[in-house]
Amino acid sequence: MSLLRRKKGDDNPVVEPASLPVVTPIGEAAPRRQVCICGKITRMTARPTAGQAALAILVSDDTGTVSAVWTGRREIGGVTLGRRIAITGAPVLRGEQLEFTNPGYTLLPR
Image (tube, rainbow, N blue to C red; front, side, top):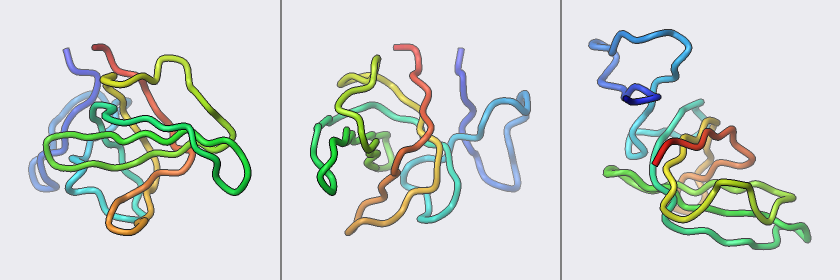
């Protein structure tokens, strides 16, 4: 049973309860647009950003990879390598990769 529905295109949306977000494939996510992406955590680092702690992860699906950074945190309970996660927010382009800063997230079943 899927908790989220995958976006199939604007002209042919999947009909499911309105409370569930539409998941955009990472390769189709655009900078500065509110999206919900879903993927597997493939990398985690605790790094200082502007002198404060920050947790950075890479999330990948079949179409691409994005990063997510939470400032002021070194860890988040349940966020581990290999875990599936849904990230919601408006990413920005950092170099050639999209990055979410302090996004909303939902841990998905394994």
